Length: 408
Image 1 (cartoon, one colour):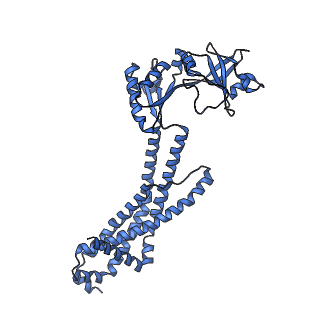
Image 2 (spheres, rainbow, N blue to C red):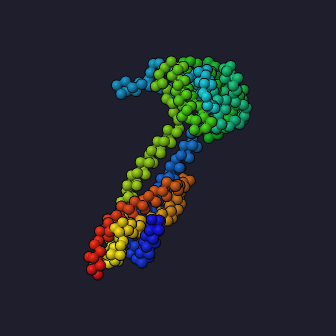
Image 3 (cartoon, rainbow, N blue to C red):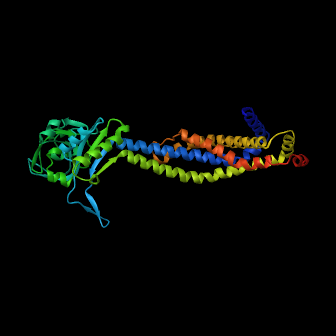
């Protein structure tokens, strides 16, 4: 059986060489369709890869966000709840210690408010951030220090500020002179212990221990809890543990909290790109369909030209399945040949697209070639060969040997 298959493909290659230019002209539809398919899939894969990189740069895929739901729907109108659960520092520490997978985490509450300079009672509008993380990795201290775990636990009246707020505090003096200045916020006299690098900021920012926030302040601006897993694979398990802990310990429904992972954003993007692939694939499929008709045309002409040959083979004992397989193998060979030409053309065209995209958008965009793309091309070639080669092959197999030999 294996010998027959190899012989069929060898005969198919010989027939293609005999009618090479005719074959190439007939499979232009496949070549163009497959080239468009390769270019489209590679472009979409590149876009998806770029989107994933941007999400990873701006957010951590290992992070789990815990937000209180402050609103409810009443008659399809969003209304703020009177009572809702929120995490405070002690509860957050208990929840974090209950996790069975290694993870870090912190509380974070940000809002705009007014602070007062103790020296001259001047009011300054600023962004106030209460956090349980002494120093976020994205923050670079220029002068002084950040607050410590001890400051958090003992409700230390300390804070560090950005360069913009430091300039507002000290005027024309050097920014480092803001260290040890006193700021009044909600009755708390805070000592500035550090200045962070943020020279391009247009608004002053003040970071202080979240434990200094009163219950009323926390209720007005509930903090967001952020848990970061050690490994991305552990995010789903940690999310479930957080949900179970909130349900068991916060004396509230889980619906009072939103547990958000950035993996959801990646999945949403993947679904969007999948839909884009399907739509574009159906559009490009028209060209592939035209190419399949071209393959059928080549084989029908081949059947007509080789009628006598088919009749002689059948008279000498060739069975219907032998003739059927001969033309099917020829169809698959032709469609594979066209698909390979289309693949090469598609790859070359994508290499030309990238510089154009970069020049027009100034985005570091790259094409992405995946095994899925090459697998799809192989499957397309096989399907075209089988689907559009079946009718000519059956027509050849059904020829009566006597009638075929007479037709000369």
